[in-house]
Picture 1 (cartoon, rainbow, N blue to C red):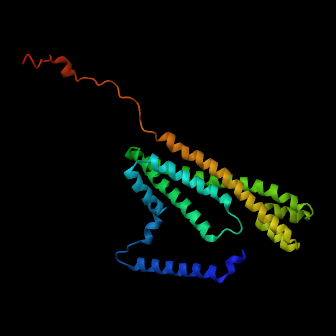
Picture 2 (tube, rainbow, N blue to C red):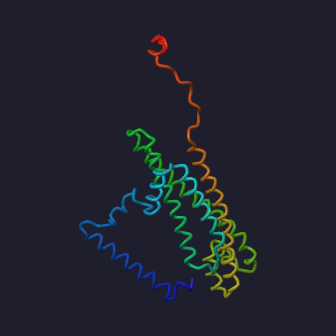
Picture 3 (cartoon, rainbow, N blue to C red):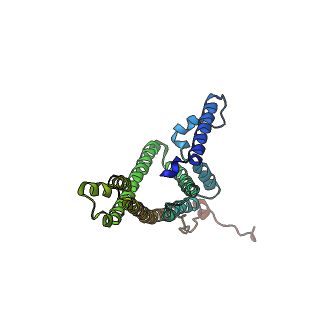
Length: 253
């Protein structure tokens, strides 16, 4: 955490925020803004970079060859969290998060549009409500599952380092790595802080692996669900008037 106090870390963040605020102010005052920040309040304009890219690819190809690779990429970038450590450069983490965000953005927009377009107009409202509910519920369940896995693994890893820690402090240290660091400072046990860091990293790596496997399973869904219709066409039936009309041989004409 000490790295965040360095000037070369805080200065770029401050400059970026100032430039972003200035840009927003200019666009809000413009009569014809090139980028209207008000549009971000509309759900359609969420996932602002990945959604247009995904929509363009779907128009050129179809939904299946776009959704499946994008979800696979999102799963693999999530699994790549297993390679992060205390010394991982911030730029590498940002690139990983950007790739994951773009992958997810490429799926949400086109899939939502495909679901709504598959319904009759009178049921579009209900379909949109169901889609949003499922998406929100999936997000909550995903956070709960990932958090539970990490919590279980963290407690198992930190437990051996808490054998001689007093009862109340031991209970606090089991909650999270941040609480364990506070306890380590209070009881003057630097080794406990290092153990908490190692336990958290191990929990994050295990959690990332499990979430990647679940996401890969999810990536297989569009492959199966969006398969093109390959049913062989039945025999072509001749129109009734053709069957009833006597055939005239060209040679006899």
